[in-house]
Length: 303
Image 1: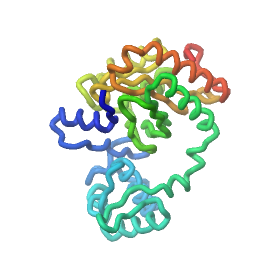
Image 2: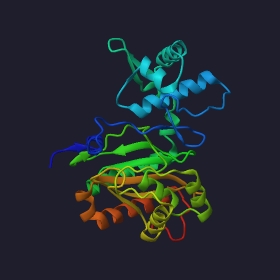
Image 3: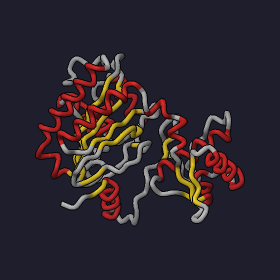
Image 4: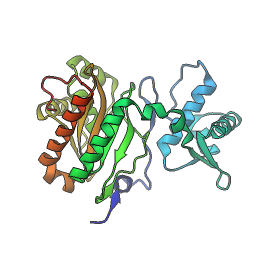
């Protein structure tokens, strides 16, 4: 079977919808998670330090477009920032190596300096325990894995990815934002929470149809969350991208809060026949991580 990437499959999915190229998911506002980033659709910021808010918006926009860069004109149009102000912000961010500027094509992209200045987040003690266990998991099951962290706005940021010799690679960049309705991450995050927390999430969310298998009604979504808890893990078959399947488990901290979710993802034809085996290995890994970090897991959590 030819080697494929998640981005390739995403483009194939868009082609089926009559879309000519992959469009990145909309940037979410940190306050309420609503779509932003398109011209005229940007959410109102707190207006405490407008220049800083615009700089953050630029970084978030470029991160959402990755790996595609953006020109000054594209950034100003998408974020409704004046050309002169935006140019000054871009030059400042490039000076500190948070952005890279290509003088020939006149485009900007994120630069690794931003990771250097935020390296403590990438090297948090808990990640030092999680990473080697997920790397070993991937080598055992021969299926790629994503590690995400839930954010306050309900979205999930990609913290790390683990690929192996496989029919496809996961090519989402570190820092990629999965929206709050990303089905498998959302179910793993919510399944062991209180009914009140689930109600709050439902009230604040507007489901988006990614494929013809995406659950949209409140009853369908609640039923899937309940099934996740009874089953002991979250699963998604063609709900986010056609032809892809994912299995996901949460990682709890010492207070019982979900601090990460990890997903084994591949073609449906690869994962579905091996689902029981992959789930056993994932639950074994989750149990060992929880033991090492002294996590407090729900009484009915299987790992």
